[in-house]
Amino acid sequence: MMTPIQIGALIILIFLAALLLWGGYIMGRCDGLETGLREREDLQRAAYAKTILELQVTLRSIQADYSRLAQTNNRLEKGPHFGPAEHQTLVATGELLRVAAETVSAFRTGEKLERDARSLRKEAA
Image (tube, rainbow, N blue to C red):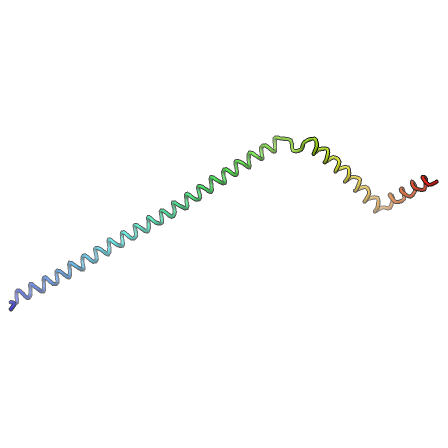
């Protein structure tokens, strides 16, 4: 049989063991929360770093496109736009457009028809 002192000691030991378990649980929980928060921050930093790297790659690509376009622009501004063959084609096209404009203008006023009729009458006579 146990004496009252032994019973008190047993109760105190059980209480201390429970206190020790509860303290260990609380400390482990706090450590786990800290570790989880740290890991979450590390994952966020990694995601941000990945986004930054992707944006830097996009920036480099855009800069390369810009330099290529700037070089093309400079080359086009400095060099002749058309060669002699293109120039002759444009002059001929301009002449055809001038003739077409005169013809349309004459048809509107009726003068061309009268001129053509007179010239045909003179040729027929």
